[in-house]
Image 1: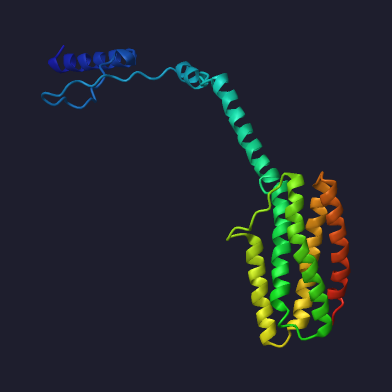
Image 2: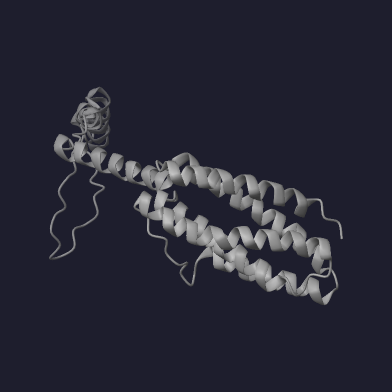
Length: 239
């Protein structure tokens, strides 16, 4: 056999063996990048187990428990604040019996001073007579209330400088002065005094219902009757 025939037989045998060999046993090419000098080899990351991931997301979150003592203290504090605010709204703006008695005396004194100072500005003789009667009744009421206050353990005081009643009558005086300058004093005065008498009678009724003094109750009822008759005359005055 010639050399050429031997060469062909050799290659045919190699091809036949490669076709029948398991591919997994064949040499695999290395595709990894060449490692640089001084570079540390990187650890191979293992794939995460799916069961570990499910367990991590399904684990219950631990909640912090509030101390019951602090919880009840907080509730008690809120309830206390609510009670204080409610008490302030209900009772904080109410007057005491002494304050109502003194306010009644203040209004009588203020109205009496107004009737006295306005008498010179009144033009109508009819209105002047009505005003004189009111001034007389109020003038006698001031010392009478001071005398009867002893039986009620109440001391009549003078109004303070920033009293709302003083501000009210100061505003009223300015209004009457403007009416005098515009020659409308009599009708304006009659209307405003009628309004003041109505307020005075309301305060008299409150004090009358509250007082335990029979003498004070009797006097206030008589005073209210006199004021009622005068109020009708003021309210019907038309100049």
